[in-house]
Image 1: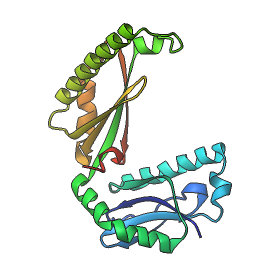
Image 2: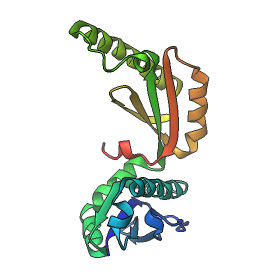
Image 3: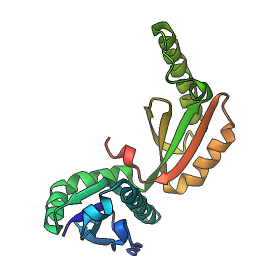
Image 4: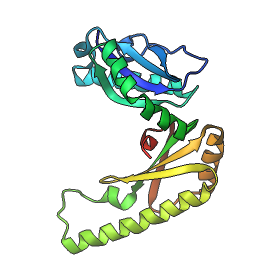
Length: 217
């Protein structure tokens, strides 16, 4: 029967997870100090084959991860990661278990937070209006300055709380990812609140999440 993978994590005492994708039961087993979570899907096409069902399945997938994250830090698989059967799952995990174990050892019990920055000037601009080359370069330079200022501010107010920062530029937003020790979650949120608002930018915080952005060193 087809297998949908959720994540790998360290074994923990709480193995009870509510139904997952397509309301299938979430199963797990331990392989060489790793616990693997998955569901058997009798008909993947029926529950993943159209946009509406895929959206529902994605929400169920992330709900499973949040439940596991409440107890231990998981390394999630991309959604949807489907394998032919249980034997294929065991073969893949056996081949990659050292990579997973090393990643979990490096990340430890940390979790990920995400901050999305949107600038008011960019939100008000009409993307359909052509921009001259000189104006485009000017906007790029201004954006780089704004991002650098926010970056410095975030790292300053969270010094000693965040283990590692990573960031990514998108077309109309900039995303920061913070790797935070589980016991420092409240300190992290409090430190961000102490920073106050930044002029011309809207920052949105979400998390905690599994540390997907920090899996690779």
